[in-house]
Image: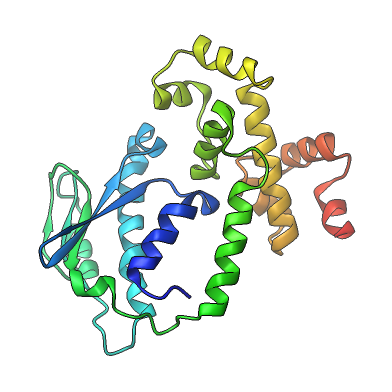
Length: 249
């Protein structure tokens, strides 16, 4: 429901953590073309996932073309850049993006004609946009998600929903030792284990409230490999099983 690509980018930057965004992109303008460069995130700790996440992120932006009138080209990228070497499926990527692709570059991202930034989206709905942005702001700022060092941890967890980092990966992300991380969190009367548990169970409550997803799928989405373990943790925290919690709603 955004007015344009430019506004969609602002929403993406402001509220990305709400959908477990793994990485962020920076928009730049150079003359008559714009560039979008992906920034690193916790996903870089899992090298085997990095290439997949980059391809997925660029595809998300490519698919925004469906928000424009049908007469607008669906392949609006003028160039794609990847930091990794040319993969075995390079031909598929070429067919998918329909533009020159450069491998082994210093960054990951894409370029496009600057005119696309202000091109109106066909599905723009000012009323719906206002309502949904207000809801995003409410969800992002409810609770202490942005306060103190624990707030930085929660923001990191929000970007990694479903594939939560270990304490060592968190330490590497913030460039500090385990002892320093624990000391900072003790000052805020919490721990990484507690923050992770509360975040996962809070996310589970949202899925139980807002979706009809089966319990085993919610368990997976919140980082539990075994639905039984998820149910035990949920009941221990809320004194209700996930099924009873949803029934009470």
